Image (cartoon, rainbow over all chains, first blue to last red; front, side):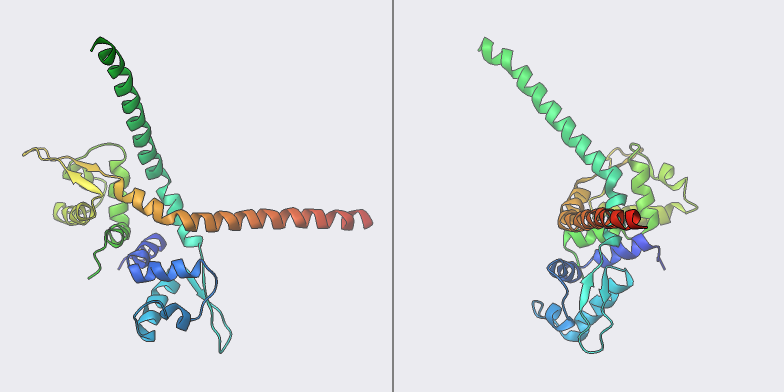
Length: 116
Length: 116
């Protein structure tokens, strides 16, 4: 069983319904009923997804007995963002290299165009 | 079975060994043997992890018969980065609010300090 926090976060994100729930929660707190509404899903099914998100610390449930609103907790996503940093450098460098290459192509083409 | 590309990428990242393999590949191409070396793992075990990474498009294997070097392919991570964007705004706003709050605290404290 893998249960380091980053792996638990990535596993929680590996589902379109769970990502959709997180997107809904960027708009503000919501009850399980409100979260279930846009999905053609039973309440128990949505609750199971919420449990995975809660376990990953991405969703926190309020403690009020009747109305237990869920809210987004972005701290685990900040950890994903930190993990991404070296790879972001990697693909930004690649974009830089591509731009450099395109510039060279344009420079190379100029004399050719002049000679034609 | 969940098999949308972003879910497949997140599932592939939900393992410390696979993330470690990706980190190794930021240093350049490597063979399966070279990738297995830092992990106390059998070649078949590393190969299984590589298959998951290949399926997610995060690793590409060379076609040379003998030496089939693996290389990192960052395109799926760029998709993760794009997916992260609204959440990044979310936690950056939170940091802004925190800074604002700390500034207010400092301003509020000043008269207090003067009166004591």
